[in-house]
Image 1 (cartoon, rainbow, N blue to C red):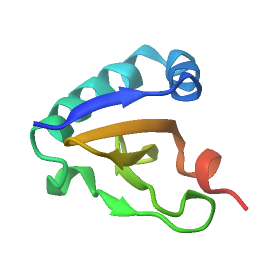
Image 2 (cartoon, rainbow, N blue to C red; image 1 turned 120 degrees about the vertical axis):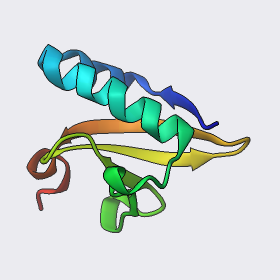
Image 3 (spheres, rainbow, N blue to C red; image 1 turned 30 degrees about the horizontal axis):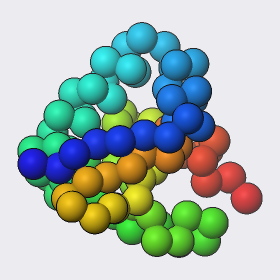
Image 4 (cartoon, rainbow, N blue to C red; image 1 turned 60 degrees about the vertical axis):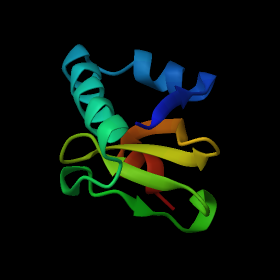
Length: 88
C-alpha cells in the first residue's frame, strides 16, 4: 500500500477547493494508495516545470501532482484544474 503525504502548498490549495472536490480527492487517494496505476487515475509522468513528477486525475479537469518517494510513498505537491497547473 502506498503511503500518501502532502506539503503545505498542496494543503493550502486543497483547503480552497469546494467540499465535493475534497471528497473526490479522498476517494481517488484511497484508490491511489491501493493501486497507484489504476486506470481510473490516468497516472502519467509530467514534463517541463514538473519534470520528475506525476499526475493523477481527480475529476475530469481536476489534477493532483505528486512525486514518488522512497519506501513506497508519494508526496503530493499541487492540486488544481488542468489550466491552473499547466498554463504556459
